[in-house]
Amino acid sequence: GEDVEQSLFLSVREGDSSVINCTYTDSSSTYLYWYKQEPGAGLQLLTYIFSNMDMKQDQRLTVLLNKKDKHLSLRIADTQTGDSAIYFCAERTGTASKLTFGTGTRLQVTL
Amino acid sequence: EPEVTQTPSHQVTQMGQEVILRCVPISNHLYFYWYRQILGQKVEFLVSFYNNEISEKSEIFDDQFSVERPDGSNFTLKIRSTKLEDSAMYFCASSQRLVGSYEQYFGPGTRLTVT
Image (cartoon, rainbow over the protein chains, first blue to last red):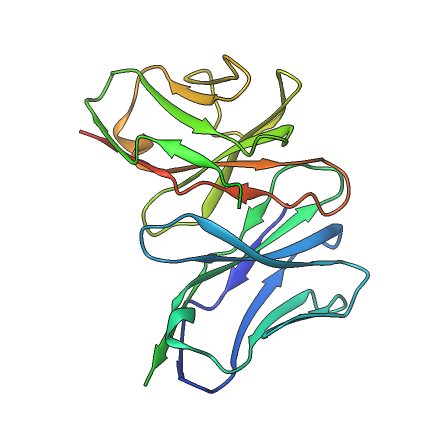
C-alpha cells in the first residue's frame, strides 16, 4: 500500500534556502504534489511533478525527484517569513483518484 | 481566482446527531472529493465523486457516510450518526479532469467537533 513520510519540523533563517524532504513507498506513483497549509487555512497546491521527470522549477520552488530511492524534495529559495507553514507532499498512484498525503513538515522561518 | 468554498467553518454537534457539511467546488470542475484530517494526523482520503456516482472510497467511508450533489453547484458530505472519533477537519476538493496531472484544489475546511 501507499505510505508517505516526511520529517516533522524544519527551521531556517530568512533569506536561506529550505529543503523539505519526502519519501514514498509505492513505485507506481504517477504524480507527486506539494501542498502548503497556513494556520487556519486549507491546502494550497504549490506544484507537482510527473514521475518520469527528475526536476521541475517554478519561480522560487524547485522539486527534485529521485525515483530509484523514492525520494522527493521541495527547495524554496530565498525563504521568507510568509513561507512559514506546514508543507505536505502527496502522491497519486496509477489510475486512482485519491491522493495519499505525508505527515506534513512544519517550516519555521526565523529572522 | 476561482476557489473551493466550504460551510460552515466550524460545526459542533452531539454524538449520534446527523451533520451535513457543504462545499461549492470550482464551477467548471467535474470531480469532487472529501478528505479529513484528525488533529495531529495525516490528511486522509474519504471519497471521490464523478457524474453523480462515487468513483472511489476508502475504508473510512462506511455506511455512516454519504455524499450528494443536490444541485449544480453544491457537494455535500453527510454523517448520519456522528461518533466522537469523527471529530476532525473535513476538506472538500475538486479537479477539472481525472487524467493527467488533474490538480486537486482544496477548500478551507470545516472543523467538526463531536461532543
